[in-house]
Length: 329
Image (spheres, rainbow, N blue to C red):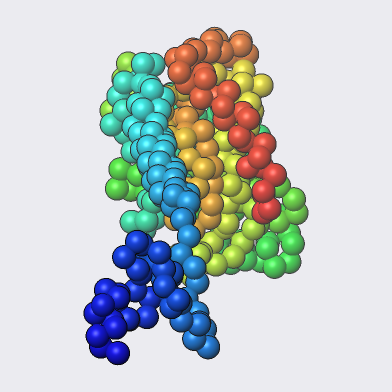
């Protein structure tokens, strides 16, 4: 058998081709045998890997938008702070009609040193002229604070009886309490009234005639101070109405020869006085020159405010009705 293989010249291994390249009985010639693929194993299989879309940019875009929005808000806050506390107050400050008042106090003080009612009125004249003008305009001089007057005001409130010259509590300017005080009762007792305090200052006057700088407010009820717990009158928040009402009385009675304004406490929306009562104001201090006997009964000469202040007055006239509509007015 061995000899036959050798004589035939063929490879006897399975799949080996013949000399002429033809396959033998056990093979396919020179063809490559396909690889055998093993069957898939049982159990969970890894998902087929596919080509993916590029990662979305919504995350970075959102972060950029938030950063931009915060920067805009910060810029707006800076602009508002500059406008509200630097630019507009500087534009609205004016003392062209009476420069001495630029360094004057802007609010009263309580006995404890707490800022009290804003100074919002002033009258230039002698004491006699002031008293005559106030009494002639329908205001009563307030009685001094004594034990007797304090009992009378308590009786007026509790028994609902009038007390036209009820005393007013002491507030302080120039380190002293008021020099004069006046009031106009409203209703049947002393709990509701218009009242004004005045302090004499020759230094702030004109031509040697003193200025009586004052604070006028409306007492709307009697209660406890929000700051000290003491018994006190609570004021109404719209102090500009009181300022304008006082000057309307003086003008109607012919007691003024000249009328103008300077900056007082400044435009304020969320003010608080010494008793913790809220107030709002355009911040102007109105000043009247008391007329001489010969000039009484005439229409006073009104001096104009600067244009910037007139613009502020227009803005305030739009805001004021909203403030007046708030609860507790």
